[in-house]
Image 1: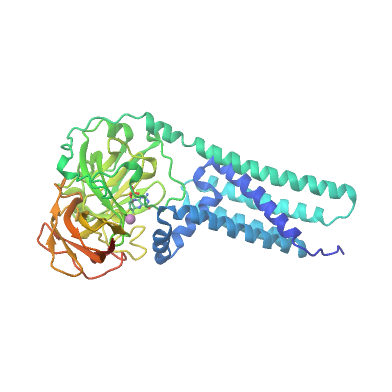
Image 2: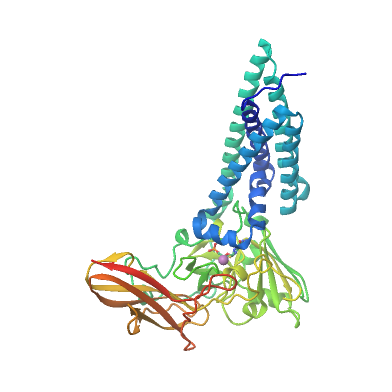
Length: 501
Ligand SMILES: Nc1nc2c(c(=O)[nH]1)N[C@H]1C(S)=C(S)[C@@H](COP(=O)(O)O)O[C@H]1N2
Ligand SMILES: [Mo]
């Protein structure tokens, strides 16, 4: 019988083994199929199975940095499991090694389920699990031998495994960076001129008040919400859009088809249903694209269809009411954002933009498929998870300035208001529960965009509460009933407290 060693050494060797295994798996994935990264597959699966409240909490706590936090979380759990499996291997070989194999198989199953490329996707995780199992068994059994040549061999092999794991991780990171070649393709692209250009943004649409959101959101400042741990890298040359389902004829559009089409330009404000009252998950851009209406007309939509299920290359889906894509609004298969190709994280090369609907039911990024269908036949990513089937954007207004504290005297209160595709008629403000006063609206770019507003205020020393509410183009006043984002968008008045000194 071998003597059972006490101490944490087998656990540490378990970590070395996982370092080696993950390094090799990530390396293979980086070159073979970036989406099959064992890390990304497990993280992505966690995002998909996480309950809605956890996702909302993640968005609220980390904003769009939630993915970095998730990756760190997975790494910590993985290292803890590795340590445990190493200890187990030290006591009851080969049970610890079996744990690594099981982890690899689980990762492989997840990667296959999440990927289109079933067989290939399994390889990185299987290699990870296998390599970790072999390394753990080998290193731990070597470490238990006392003879001098074995001790030296043990040290050498531990160093080799650690170094290889680290190098493999580093190289896979660099290789992943090189897949930023899609970024290179993007920046070399020149967008065609729109056949129907939007009028210049009226200069009176931008009040230019410091601290107030600009009426056109720069791409770099545009909020980002998606379930993609690794941003899909889609080469326009490989992109196509399949339009099928309840249509007279299936059609497939390529990038060249889009570039050769008469493109339309429109200003549309996107909003996320997860936006809380006063929140900033909203942005406005000038989009360039092919009207979805024309694409659907080419395919010939059946009379009994009422929904279009759009699918992203990453598996995300959105169910959009058919009429929002066929009526006269500016629903676009967009390729341009503020005069440039879509940024990769905003859906390059092609995404959907639909005025008036929250992003989760309309704004599919990296879109590759439109299936004409019915609400009673299919559900989409978020509607399957309890969010409302229809997602019209609700009337909302927000105070951007002042924030925190101001000097006493003449100052300005300013903010944004929106009800895309309906329009905003007025904004009212009240201080310390007093009379509602009409704010001055800036010129709206269109009914599909948000609008800035401001109100002069003679601030007196002390603490003050400021509230705002909008009145829609239909004359209806924004409700003060407080509702959370789930299941169909937050309501209530934005209320802030300022200290006037
Ligand atoms: N592929 C994909 N598209 C997606 C999503 C997603 O998770 N995956 N999220 C949607 C949601 S909920 C919103 S609010 C918008 C956000 O678009 P943006 O990131 O460009 O601001 O994208 C939509 N399109
Ligand atoms: Mo969203």
